[in-house]
Structures are given as C-alpha cells and as structure tokens.
Length: 230
Image 1 (cartoon, rainbow, N blue to C red):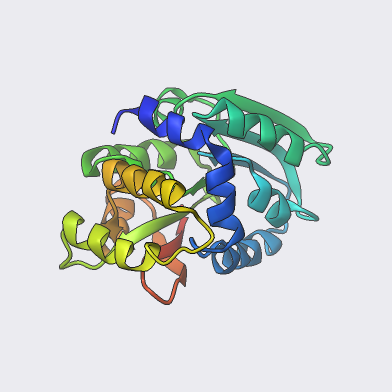
Image 2: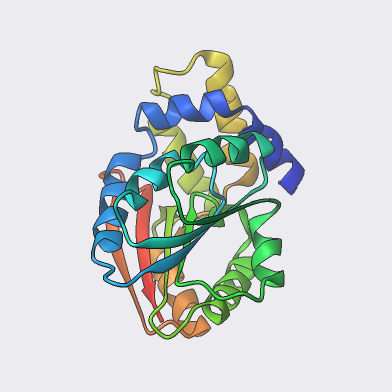
C-alpha cells in the first residue's frame, strides 16, 4: 500500500485509539517488556521514535528514565500533534518530524542511542526491511540498541495465511462497530507484511547486530517485541 494510504488510515486516529484502548494489539504486555529494558539503562540516552503515532505508550515507558533527547517521526500529522502533547512534560530536547520513517532513516546522519519502531516496520516489503536494519545499525553507537514491536508470522505461514489467522482473532473486536472494523481490516490486508521471528533475527544479523532477543510474544503469536544489541 502506498505511504499516502497508510497516512490516511492513521489520520483516523480515534479508530486506532479504540484498538489500543481495548488492548487488541497487546500494547500492555509489549510496553511492559520495553519498559523493563529502558529502566535498566544507567546512562543518559537519546531516543528516536519511528512511526511514533501519538507517543502515549512511549511517553509512559520513558517517564522517570534517563532520557536526554527525544525525537519522533510519523507520517500522520494528526498523530504527531498528539505526540507533542503527550511528550510535553519531558523537559529535555525534543524534535517532531512529519514524514515517512523509512525515508528519514535512509537520509539521517545523526546518531542516537536507542531506535524504537512500534507497529510500522511491517508496512515495508522484505527487501526494504533489510535496508532499514542496515541503515538503523549505522546510526547506533557501540552500546546502542534497536527495539521494535511488530506483527509476526510463523516460518511456514504465507502472507495470506497469517492475515487470515489475524482476521479470525480481529473479527471478534467488539469495541469497534462494523464500519470501523472494516477500515482496520482493509488497512491490514492492504499494507501489512509480517515476517517470522527467525526472519527478523536473520535480517538483524546480516545488518551487523551482535545479538537479538525476543522480549515479548502475545498468546496468539501475532505480535512480538525484539531487542537488537549493537
């Protein structure tokens, strides 16, 4: 799906907030795992939030951390304006960029300590995901890390099969009305390209990350959080 179509979906932010509020994407477990990693960071750090959305969950994770500089990138101006509000209490350096996260990573030259990507990498085809890992690795210092939270599939599942399995779960999202659920389904079937855990491990290794681990997997094995160390 073209980036413009992805932006149009996320500009309808109230639908996405319903999905998150009902924990249909397992945000609670995912961000609890991310928070444990952030809490153990002993030195001040910079944080690049790619596909930041409204940064509500990220702001909670970063609260009381040693965050020194925060930078957000998102394709939706609606979401990014909410991110500015949700990060208003942070007194350190802040920057909010309206744009495509993949393009930003390819063009970026400034390093950062932590790169975080939440539910955005799966919009890229496999070859572009590999490019993303290489570009992200080049931006991280010796003690940096890439953390990402994404939908996953099993090694043997095709894209069609994982989307069908996702729909068997998602069609029971009762907090959404029929029209809202259809918009979510159209977005997922049009723009989601999940990879397997093993596939992500291989991409990270090829890009030069020395270690990748899974921090969280939801009970349906539809979403996982990864931590890649430089």
